[in-house]
Image (cartoon, rainbow, N blue to C red; front, side, top):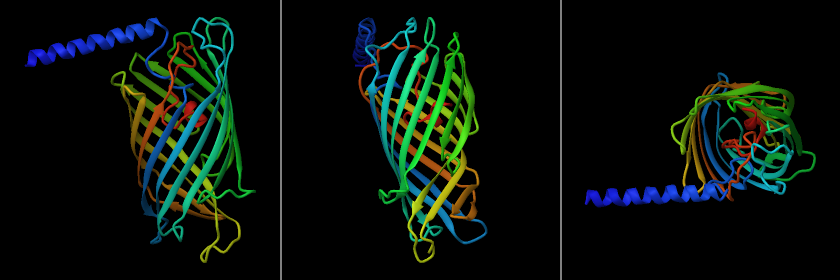
Length: 332
């Protein structure tokens, strides 16, 4: 019985290897391209409530999000590493994010929401092989509550990024500028960073001022990362009996250290659980500023990718990660 099972397993393995060889020989890889393929992603997260200042108030949230990305234009073909002509692509991305506040810092509990739409332009260039990636992204968002669309409360953000991959395919640097609410308010931030591939299984990435990651690839399907990064944003919320100002802006930001795993299934689905510890949070309601004690943070993402994966230049052949195509993740 065991012998029959082993024979069956061996035949299945051989069949998969043959299928892989056939796909490769025909120029059609099995997986969708991690950067330029259509995808959708669903997120669920939980920020454990913790004490605010030395009061009895606490703040936390339960949240969820949905992202959809679609290439609008990717040129006539996908250029290989030997191609010398520039490669252009345009991507569109829509995102919905909702966080239900908990306990009593914001009364009553609010459903803080952000609706956003982004257009990203890519250009890869290089004299013999494409080694430079230029990215220009513009985003319009509506950070309100209950997904209400209110004129005057829309926000515009953007990024201009240059990423250079050296000829050994092991080291890259990133320079640019980004206009982002990642620190709790709209700020123009310089982007300075780089990454290094140590052997075939380890990557280290550092970007100032808000990202560090170390990743180990256990197999083709499974990897784990240790990350240090900042997270923040703001929402326009309505006044109530405790906040009687007509225009109320709630801002928050915190840093976190987290352990993140990625599992790539055979059906083009990526599962991403994450658990982390946050530093002291910074909360603000208009000009009133408070500090929140450290807490725990949990997140789970499910991403589904579509399409095929033709050969592409190494500068394009990387995975932008669990957040979709977001410059704050790309620049890691």
